[in-house]
Amino acid sequence: MRQDKRINVRLLDVFIAVVQHQGYAGAQQELNLTTSAISNYMSELEAYVGFVLCQRGRSGFSLTEKGQQFFHQSIKLLDEMDQLERHAEALKGDIGGTFCIAVLDATVMDKSLSLHEIIRKFSEKFPAVHLNLQIRSPYEQVQGILNNQIDLAIGNYPSSVNNVIEEKLYREQHWLYCSHLHPLFEENYISVEQATKCGLVTRSYWNTSDLRKRGFGHSTATVESMEAQLTLILSGKYVGYLPEHYAKSFVKEDRLRPILPSEFGYQAPFSMICRRGRSRELFIQTMRELLSQQTAKSAK
Image 1: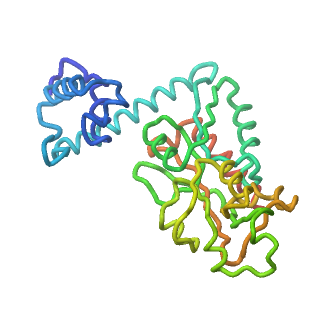
Image 2 (image 1 turned 135 degrees about the vertical axis):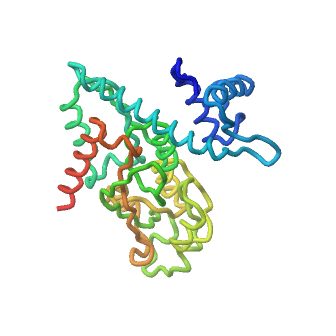
């Protein structure tokens, strides 16, 4: 490897994107480059390191053994550089910068989280920080964490992910609801069979196994947000799961009714996640502490 010149970080960005997208074509959109430009970057990087990083052909994209090792070191290096930049921002007289948090929708009324209180305390500690709060699905949250586009996320994650640290916070109660316009609303006795034969609206990121866990074979409508799900349930044509805190006011108004709570109720574990290697960064560490304190306080 040449010792008279430092490696161009842009080459590493291109290499990582190519690996994550398993080829040049998939990385085009993220990098905003043509495949020929990406090929030139990769050739320059391989010339610099002195060995072949990846194989491309009819059998598909794959890393060489050395390319695999170099990929992991590249990720580690860029993570450390990102962390150095954030620490430099924190060392300024005015601790500024941007901090991005992602949450699931319909969290504003969740007293177990009280996100508004956490944000108030965070902003008092760092008044010069530009806060970016996003509503994202679990999949989008994880991808944003891995791409360093999201600093910390709060949600329900069905499985663990490499390079992501997950810390449990609390459990969110869900019930199966129908509206006052639905045929089951006035029924004194509802059987499991009656409930599972109803049209079901669910979230787009649920899969077949999620439905089967709840006793349903399939859904008849999908939505991207809790508000859209509530709208379809209120139409009287669908039943669907909602968080208890979100449905509470509609239940009080006799516009929603939980169906067979002993059969269909479940608790969704909520966690906060951040990228491995970044958990001790000032903003992330502070937010983690505030979240832990607030959710522990709410659980009492």
